Image (cartoon, rainbow, N blue to C red; front, side):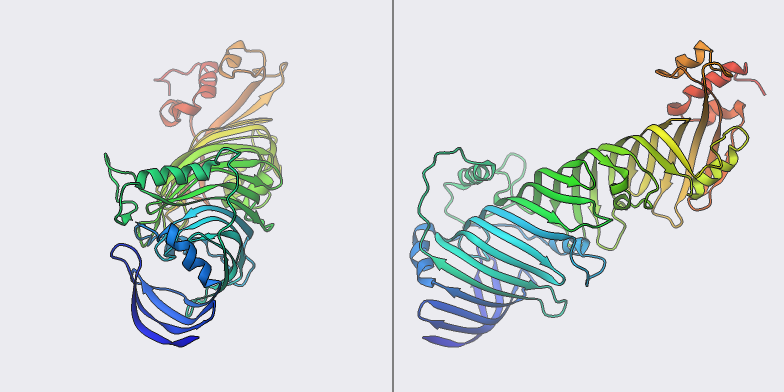
Length: 492
């Protein structure tokens, strides 16, 4: 039996790192160690208060002699704090949107644990103010490990309460199957670091030198609670810790009510005030009904099947709009749906087209296909080659600055009404040459939109100004009208 209290301790944590100002109480009774009210500082950050009970300490002592301690030293990850702030729920008292996370951790090498963690199977259940972790199997320093831990994310006194049960090393299994992706990554890391007896700081590589060391890798599966703003059912994929980056690959997300998303993401956590994001994605077979609120559209504004591909990159800050500093490009394609005409812009466009558009006073606009390319430049949205095909054909080129409130919009919109083959313009071959795949004629006009998004001004563009005012991407239908009315460049 050994019992007592300690304070002002320093403990080596790999390389020149130290856990400083350690204080707490300890009790060692036969094969059990109990640490209570343990506090400390690591890399300038105060650690949560820890209460830990470890059963079977002798197994760790015997097994760790053959395994050794962690030799790599990952770089600091100050971006972890803003990442947690970005992911925190809007209502701290509500149940988290993530129901459970299953982790198959191939390896985790961090000097805070002192010994390497291998082949862990962990179930993580987020709570209203923290999370609960259940270690079902794995090894610590060669000894088998199981246990439970609860992290309380109290802003004033965060704490971790854990109980671990150590045992003899697990029996080796016959290698009958090829190694999975995570194991292959670990073997690559081991080969990269072999031959060095000194602690290696991950992330210190540069061009022509050893690449950043992968100090952790895992497969994951995430289950979500049903939420209107989070149309996810289940997510699976691979994750790895490389230097100060968290990298995700082969990520697939099941969407509500249907469809799926495939993602690749890299989070650079080197900055203390922001997370640098690099994201590529593809969405297939989804529906606007499930995605609208997730992309900040009013509920039921748009229906129909939708797909998208794109990439986004740039810093994301906790207290700023998500897209405020992002750059990227997204291609969107939708079909067989409707658009409610209750937004200010659509209402004003409908009013402006009353003279020739029988749908101007309708509550909704049906469409067969809707396509467009969205560009993002530090919070400034651009929509290129936007087109709606249906009873109306709509073309638009839009610029919207979300950094200002209310957001100002500048756009040119072309609205054309299709007629059947026997009606006006319907039998003109020239028109059909400007409308590939369509045997229908059209009449319509272009409009200039300018002003705040919640109350824009809509002004019809005279035909004589169209060739200079309309973007090239949406000039094709106007060319037909221009020929029809016999206008030349110099006509007044």
